[in-house]
Image (tube, rainbow, N blue to C red; front, side, top):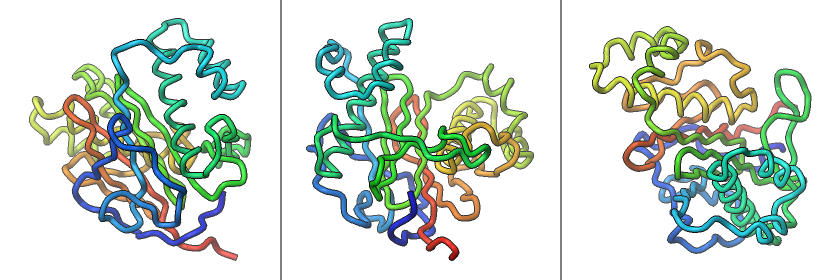
Length: 255
């Protein structure tokens, strides 16, 4: 999808606070610059905390999810993973339906062309809609982002020290140096903060982990470093989690 409205080239330096899908009503129709909170041009962010109770009945989600989503749900070996996937995609469809003024089951999800190979496995999109979105889930949280321009979102549980030790040296050289300078007790949080920023950016561009972790610098410190053409912000996700969102600037594409 092509950007439809200009957005700010920078997001606030403080973490963005998402709306809670557990406690807030569904939104009204999307309007350019809908945004989140007082930050003009910021993406609209929603956080869903998955319930500990019974999962959505199969007959309910099979009426809403499309054939690919139902096949994906059926492929999970563990009930917990299937239930979390279903809850995340039901939430996505309910929000998209509310923003676009259609029934959740009527939302036609597609994939854009991959920027690396051109195959249709790039960013997720809604067919024919000018609204961009992204979804991420980890543990019992689901983060959803919506914007006028391409957007990426990621939420992760704070990683264990063993993950930091094995993956940390694969980051950008400046990030490796930053991690080594952080006290060991704080290193897992710094790494996880960097990881979610990097994932959000790579999901926003559509390249995903086809790009090496060492290529783009996003930083491990308290404030993210935004790559050219993108604005990065951390997102409040609660204890034990880190989250971030990446928003493409709204400059019109070259003729």
